[in-house]
Image (tube, rainbow over all chains, first blue to last red; front, top):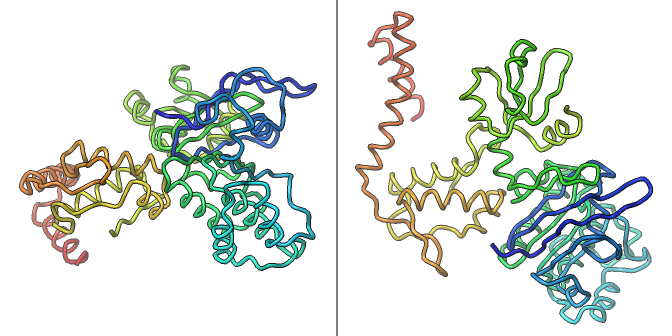
Length: 280
Length: 125
């Protein structure tokens, strides 16, 4: 498989927080959702990939090459905490970007503006959703091969989020293009992400295809008596609730074969996150 | 191509896609030589991941329903309709077997079961 982005054993220490040995790979033509709690290390990892944070241990390869500034022209970026000055209009951005990117596609940019109904007014008059869309179409309009977005859907309403998901699926119609996007709104990812990488407390807990997670992982609900019968190696985490035990299992079918428990539910990414973080 | 996916179902999405395409082939809705939408187009149309549609197509290919032509796409194969129908009949048999088990345990007669089938069959029309 050809990878568009490889993060190998990346570590970075801060006083109160550390990234520990972070590794994952994003194949060509795929969407990867990067999930985790606020403060788990998503933004730090993204800033390292983008060379905004420059000192770290480990190695990052983009398009198969060691990271270097030459590659930036093929990367589209949307960060959570950066934006254009509020007095600018979409037309101003068009002019500025023509100078910055040699492959800036003014026509594509204007097509997107029309499609999303973004009028040529100062950005300060834009709603949060309109600003986010403007950022994303700006990131797309120099024909990047890799799109990296930090929380692109946070703060948007469901309709706005769904429009953005559409843009993502349009983008990967070209099978040379990939997307890495971080979010804590996992429902956005559940269906369209090909891979899910889950970071917790600076460490990668899991990086798998979303089909593998959604089709195989499950939540077993059982009584204390039943729980005591279960071999420790047959579940990843467990939680004791007021009325029942919940077990996170990696393969519903295997578990069902071995134990004759009644309730094995399919899992959502939200439940997976909660079980991984709160479970024992 | 009409495919209806339930996100609520216990059946994995790739399997839902696979079964629906299969039944279109069996019922001649999709004919030999018809081209299927690309993996990426279908993923976008169904709002699912590329890997999901890829899995569905790969399984259909393995089972001989479709064939990939590199650079061109996926095409419907000539299938043995009898064999395909046989497969579906087997599935029905398994399900009916369960129903009959329940009937026998509870003293329900063959006639009563047939009546249920008649009613259900008409309802679906």
